[in-house]
Image 1 (cartoon, helix red, strand yellow):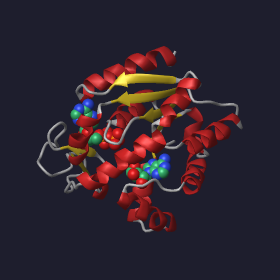
Image 2 (cartoon, rainbow, N blue to C red; image 1 turned 135 degrees about the vertical axis):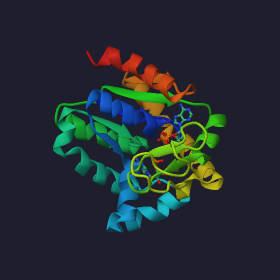
Image 3 (cartoon, rainbow, N blue to C red; image 1 turned 45 degrees about the vertical axis):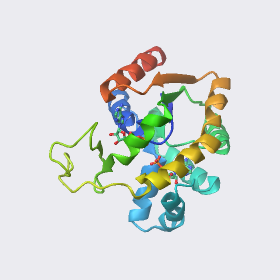
Length: 217
Ligand code: ADP
Ligand code: AMP
């Protein structure tokens, strides 16, 4: 299955991606995670991407598309994949379509996790992540077992630099202008499915499974 997760920052894409990837045995590919890994390793891609992430802006299409073409060419993507955070512009979506059509493939479903804007700010500012393993928590809605510590590797969990209120506003603005048009783009291809993302984490996953069971036959 080739799945795209759509939705504003903080909608729950990364949270749900973990469950979907485990259940359907497909790799979870998060452009944000790839950029953050490169930033922490200070690669040339990381040095270039950092200025955009810090300001809540999109990394230029050319850089992002080239990075994703390399990632999608890796063998584990042959059985399908789950994209989280890509595409984020119509140019990226067209590049992805072209890349897939070269191997006779196409996206099976673009899943939009629908969450109203007033819930988003709380979700993002309460997010905490483990810098070591990437596990994600929420101080209120999904707290770790021991306050401030990752359940998996017991490191201190931290707030992402771009999860402050000021940067979130800029990221939501970027989403409205550059990413939201993808909803119409995938609707026109007849692959868009919208799930209600306002319930608890388990409930949202159930909503997603209800959609995927019709596709994964
Ligand atoms: P995204 O990947 O779309 O930016 P995340 O999956 O990181 O979003 O979720 C953002 C924050 O909201 C995280 O702290 C996560 O624990 C929390 N969260 C995710 N889904 C829900 C939900 N259904 N209800 C409440 N909080 C949630
Ligand atoms: P995320 O982890 O999905 O919230 O992404 C964090 C940041 O990484 C974004 O605010 C952008 O700066 C950058 N980013 C992630 N995915 C993309 C993309 N597809 N295109 C451009 N920039 C991206």
